[in-house]
Length: 328
Length: 213
Ligand SMILES: Cc1cc2nc3c(=O)[nH]c(=O)nc-3n(C[C@H](O)[C@H](O)[C@H](O)COP(=O)(O)OP(=O)(O)OC[C@H]3O[C@@H](n4cnc5c(N)ncnc54)[C@H](O)[C@@H]3O)c2cc1C
Figure 1 (cartoon, chains in turn yellow, purple):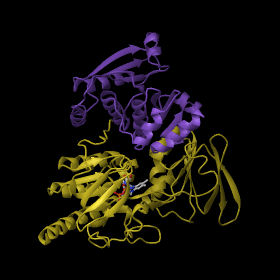
Figure 2 (cartoon, rainbow over the protein chains, first blue to last red):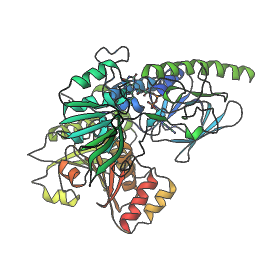
Figure 3 (cartoon, chains in turn purple, blue):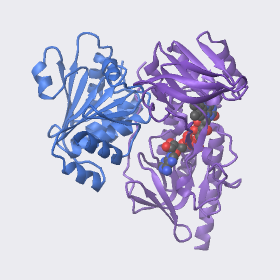
Figure 4 (cartoon, rainbow over the protein chains, first blue to last red):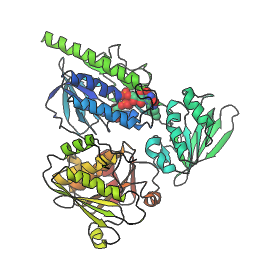
């Protein structure tokens, strides 16, 4: 089945001069949920997205635990629906518009600077920047990126038809993205640092029961080997101390995520990993500035939680703007 | 059966509604070993049907060698996106999945004929003396890919010396293997400098400098 997805860069050209009620940074599920609410509520809403709509959720092959989709739904398709719903109520969306700085000016006015030099103005700003895959920081990782080493199985898996691949990390994301490769790869080996997998039972069972997959625990990967492209992965067995070379054609790294919050480091309070602290109404310590979704501290990375956060922020924004106006 | 559903068509209509100049999609198909050739033509026709500015011309690659050569097309299936002039925008394979966006952006670029690049990138491209051949390898399931592809199209629109080819890797596996493509997006400058990932303009500029040095 052929599918066609449209990512209009800017359907309506957002203008830097306008004052938006809400400027949302990041078009993942969290940011788009806030946008659905605020634009439906008549607030002038802009989303600035560094890449393209959908965030991490869009790179997920099949999402099975988001309520309302009993057969599961493809991540990209679900995010397309979020986008449509937001745009239906008038949300403006700018893709390829990375935010590099948020500058609080007078009460109720922020300047939001994009990489291309555009400056957008918002009465409130919502940080919904999510997180990005962590690197292992081992020899060979940088050299072989794009040459058999990848952080996105949905994007690059198809290069490994009938080939052997290794997935480093057997947590939820590693298993969830690795399992679909079993459909076409020759063999998938999962290497996990911990003695057990922390992934959902159902995913573990699927990986374990599949004839083309192997799960190995207590494996500390120390190096990616290759020639022109990846040829193997070196790992130390943490129980026996033995070093082993696992030959492979491809390597996918799923060892967790780190938050995209550097650009607001001196503005908000963050935990030691860089996740942004916000209260139960999603407020950061700066009035009118919110943090939601995966970038928020102490938040389990789940779609429905991001969606809940997005709603919470939207409701508080309405109150906040009303109060601002009353104070005049 | 139509390839594009009603909703997508409506978005396409909107996106192409204020195009200043006409755009011609010149398609080269092959009779053999081309799984999606009929769909590529159909897709282009469905897009052209909603805009009076877009037209489609179809050739058989094996028969129309001269036409292909005139457009620097050496393999098929291929789409040349031509505006008032040939800005050098090409798509190899079927622009499905996320790559459908790339096609539409290409059409918009070819119509407007002006890039949205920042000043310093424009200045650099303006100073080019030698031809630059950008190849961007993509897959339809890669959400990061259109960013790299569209950037290449922007650069080609800006400079007559830049030629931008977006290549759907699954349909051109030999070429992908030749360049050791195992991850996308991958931009290759003049067949030698590689830039992995959806890189900002500065990184492509750096690779162009290295390739021309
Ligand atoms: C492999 C995998 C499988 C998963 N499976 C499930 C599942 O089955 N069920 C489930 O509930 N959850 C799942 N998740 C988790 C879920 O995807 C996340 O919880 C969710 O995407 C978080 O949403 P978000 O909007 O906070 O952030 P994201 O989805 O990460 O979106 C953030 C967006 O912000 C953009 N951005 C970042 N910085 C900037 C900037 N400076 N300027 C502009 N834009 C910026 C990013 O490009 C991105 O598009 C999975 C995650 C992964 C990786």
